[in-house]
Image 1 (tube, rainbow, N blue to C red):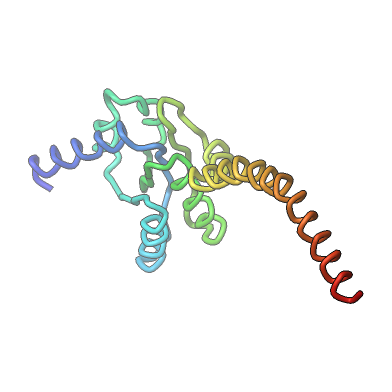
Image 2: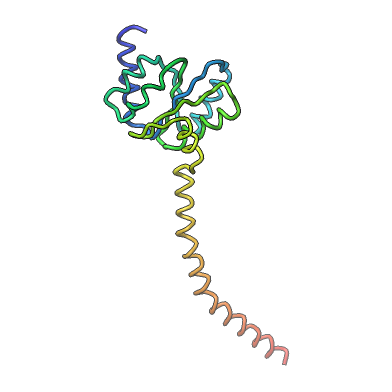
Length: 172
């Protein structure tokens, strides 16, 4: 990489650290190319991205961001996984780390909060934004359904009673 490419990479990474919901830092030593491609595709499906960055450039990119507290994590062969959804990147990284022991989660950041490995794993167990929205809609929708059933019940009962009287009159 020449200086211009490095400067552009640092600027892009700085924007990532400023704008994403969460960032996960992990060691990837020993992962094959197929494993890395699998991780990237799973992360892409969840709305995230995986990048391998030089530690020195990543630490420079962290300067002036809320995530600056995680600069100590950049030692050895590290990769960065990030997504706009604060739960997506930790969830995919933790699931992949369970299946493949060569990916070791070091920590990460969510906004200005620096996370250790346990913090990332705890964040991975939380439901995503879409799951939370679905639960809220379900909770709002349930009372409305019950009210409609209660309001319609007397009319349905009356219709059944009238039907029974009509059948009784026809039989007589």
